[in-house]
Structures are given as C-alpha cells and as structure tokens.
Amino acid sequence: MHLTRRTGLKLAAALMGTAVLPALVLPRAARAQDGGFRHAVEGGEVVIHPVDHASMVLETPAGVIYVDPVGGAEAYAELPAPDLILITHEHGDHYDQPTLDALPEVPMIANPAVAGMLPAAMAERTTTMANGDSGEALGLPIEAIPAYNITEDRLQNHPQGRDNGYILTIGGQRFLIAGDTEDTPELRALTDIHVAFLPMNLPYTMSVDQAAAAVTAFAPDVVYPYHHRGSDLDAFTALVAEGGSGTQVVVAPWYAEADA
Image 1 (cartoon, one colour):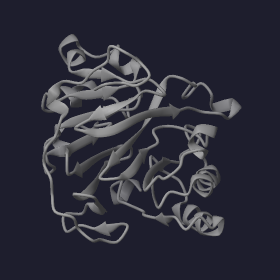
Image 2 (tube, helix red, strand yellow):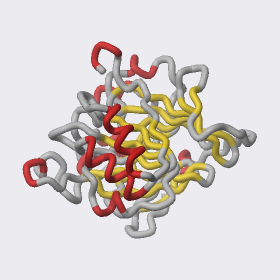
Image 3 (cartoon, one colour):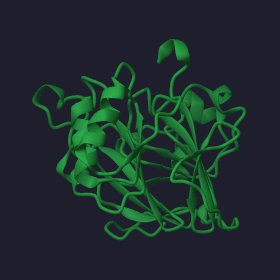
Image 4 (cartoon, helix red, strand yellow):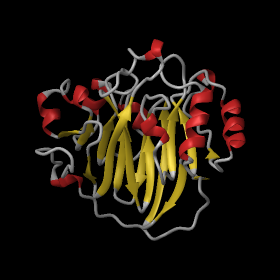
C-alpha cells in the first residue's frame, strides 16, 4: 500500500488482486441465492454477507474482504476464505484475537491501537491506517475515516482520533463501512457513497434519529443499518424516507431471530 498522507506504510504485494468478472446489470440491492446481497459494479458485483452485529464478508471482483471478524472461525465456515481483513477498532465486537488466529494468514489493515495489540507475526502482515490515510488494498482505493462519539456522555466510548471507518472504491462505486461513530461532521460531509453501513445502538453509537439525519445529509444510494441491536429499524426506515434523500434502506439479517 502506498499511503498518500503518511510514509513508510505499505501492504505486501499479496494484496494486489487480479480476478475480473463480467459486468452485471442488477438492482441497487438484490438478494443473492446464498443469502448475500448483490450490488453491480464495473467488472462484476459485490456480494455482502452479514455475519453478526458488526462483522461482514464482502465478495468483490478483486478478492474477499472480512470486516471486523469475531465469533470464531466457525462463523465463517460456509463463506469464502479472506484475501484481506479490515479491523476498525479494539472493542471485542470488532477485534477478537482468537478469531483472527483461526483465520487464514492474509494481509490485514487496522487502526493504530489495534495494530499495537497484535502478536508480532500478525503485525508483520498488518498495515496501520490512521484517520485520514488513504492507499490501495487488493488494487482497490481505500480511505480510513474518523469514527468517534460527539455526544457528551458518550465521548469515552469512541474518542476522536482513535478508531477508523473505511471507504472502499470497488468498480467505480464507493462503499462506506462507518465503524462505531455518531453523525460527525466528517460523516455528514461524505459524497458519492453508493453503499453505507451505519451503526445505531445507544449508548455506544448513534440513535435512530441521528443515523437517519446523517443519511439525509450525505445521501448514499443504499444504507444498511448494522451494529443496531435493540434499535427500531422501522422508525429508521420511515425517517430516511421522510428525509427525501432517495436512499434505499436494506434491512439485512445481522442477528439470529432470537436476538434481533
């Protein structure tokens, strides 16, 4: 990885993917037969597999990306193996060392706090990205954006400057993984986001009202509520519609039915 704002940080050449799929014409979000959610991009499609809470798998034309994998390797047994792992921050629902130990030894990207916690051998294949860094992974442009709390009684949960969200540009489309954040100025200022994953659970991230207001502000084409245990997704969907952004809300199965 060549980082444009910081020097000395590079990914191994193994990150450069070469797979190319034929172009597909699909709706903005279509359910795949395997339970994933499909989005057409130049050169193929992105298939999104919700795993649990904040964990997901993205199948892309360039390779398979695991985001905040937790829950043990068994949670991923029916999914394709990763080519890249992204970690947003250190909390146990995002960073779980035993799960990482059980997964294939592929390149990783993490925020500085998590990078400093990794075993030495794993740290050697991990690129550190801080807020504002940008570069490439699997040949895809990637940006690390701030993820933090702004409400006074939540500031200790995710202090400014520590944790990441990520924007991946895949086949000309920008995919936002917001991480644990509130509706920060940086989030509201984003542009040209095709798919956004937004958290909404109190007291750790956003309220439903905050998340809907953020969607109205930056108007992604599609938004997936995630990290939302206990939140009213019907209310969120209604508020997004009232906001007039035209954003499509996709409610995906992040939780087992008993835990939803």
